[in-house]
Amino acid sequence: MDLKKDLLYHEFIHREREFLRAEYNPELEFYSYVKAGDLHKVKELLTEDFADKKGLGILSDNPLQSLKYHFVITAAMIARYCIEGGMELSDSYSVSDFYIQKADKTKNPNEISMLHYEMCLDYTKRMKNLRKKKITSMPVAKAIDYIYDHLHTRITLEALAGYVKLNPSYLSRLFKKETGLTVNRYIRVKKLETAQNMLLYSEYTPAEISSILAFPSQSYFTEVFRKELGTTPAEFRMTHLFESGLGKPDEEI
Image 1 (spheres, rainbow, N blue to C red):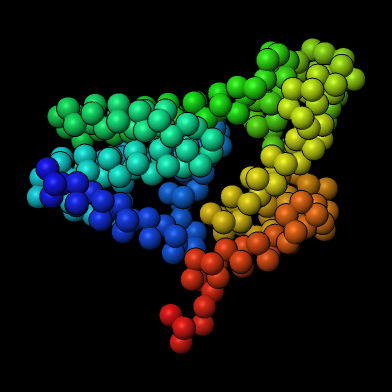
Image 2 (image 1 turned 90 degrees about the vertical axis):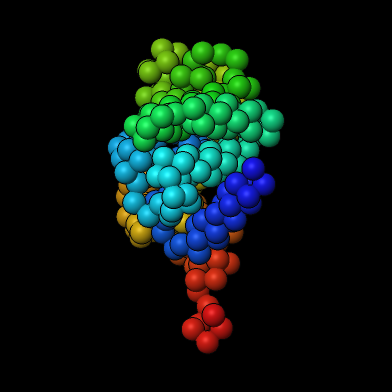
């Protein structure tokens, strides 16, 4: 049992280091969407069976047991990301333990793949609900869902008000009361959070990100990004590369 724990721990650390050194890692991007509660994007990315995932190392001579070990590592990574996203530590690890125990009873790779899909959606739904837990009214909760689903478009107060069937002025006051932010500022903050993830975990250029997130222009995107975060999108990405050790000259590596 101690050997098993030691193996899992070292593999976890090894993979974590690989994640930190990977300039653009799809797995990190996936975890960030789970953390954000982006159910639509997570479903979109869960197209490959966990059992068919490329790059999984051999952790046991028994292929099924090896896959189970990888499931444990994945559950630990998702649990950690969700804790960083605001989920209570005990809650996150309770969910992780629940799925790890179920994985231990699986009899074939297909069952593990199905359980992986279920676990990822469960965590994502919990994170989605978590971001709305302080919201008491249905209109504001619906407005927030609309915002998350339409970050790639230009969102107006009028469109939101029409969607939740409230007067724009009333929705504006209610939204500020329950979230502490105006509608426009909330939208801006969420678009910039998404932009940061895209800068860190995708190969999109700042210009492409600006277009994808429906900013009026790249210059406006850069201006807002600098105002909110104290740096430009390009500088933000470069800083991350240096912090992860990817931006150092060859002789320093």
